[in-house]
Length: 294
Image (cartoon, rainbow, N blue to C red; front, side, top):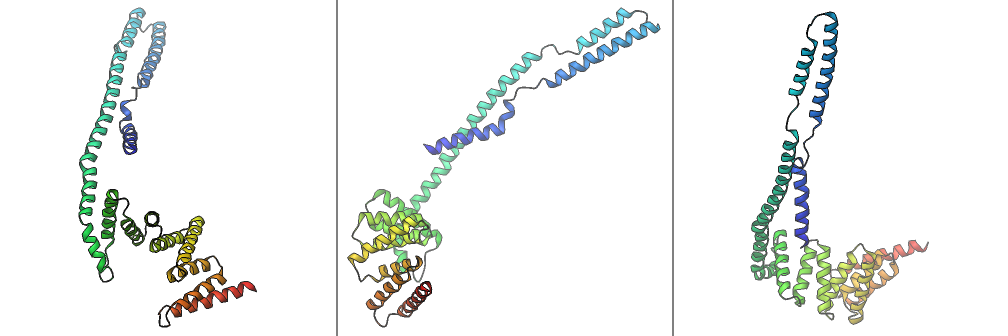
């Protein structure tokens, strides 16, 4: 409904700009100027006749004045008002007709082209949903292009309209939002997946991750709370501890960051390739804490 209201307003604006001259009343300024000039000419000529009469250049002054008056009357249009009214009437009618024509033609074109194209694209994307699920199995060796990611997201939107309680599809849509750098899509999708399956720690972790990446302090605080919920359920969750440590470091709580990374080291195998990075992070946090204490 809002779309058609916007279309109607835009049609009126564009029509008004394009066809405004049809609404303007014909100006009688030129006619008034002409009448004033004729009168001025008449009085000037009348003075000349009187001067010529005094000088004896003309014999019949009355005849000269009658001829002068007749030339003035001949120069005045006889039926100016009816023509003006008729032109104004047809101008308004033409304006209304053209506005209606623009609306009908524009609406028809959108109905035949815009909605058809949109519906066709959605349908084609939806038919390829199974194909996209197969494609992501080889994502590491053959990543999906941005166009494929967008089509995959459209197909999932259509699927979720039919099965809105499908938490797995919501979670997948959130991952696509992250891949497309669409933070709002990822946030909304992970939030919905977590709402449908509140005990799923993987859903909660992704939801917390997006919240922590937000620029809104309230989102960051909520993300931290979600992480703490995960750790209360599973205190050995290394990924949750990692996110919590980085969040503490970002808040300049270096002592908490170092302690959290230390907990991670205790939970990780000795041969884990991530250990050197975490050890350097601990050293950096401790050095920052020492500098702040000075």
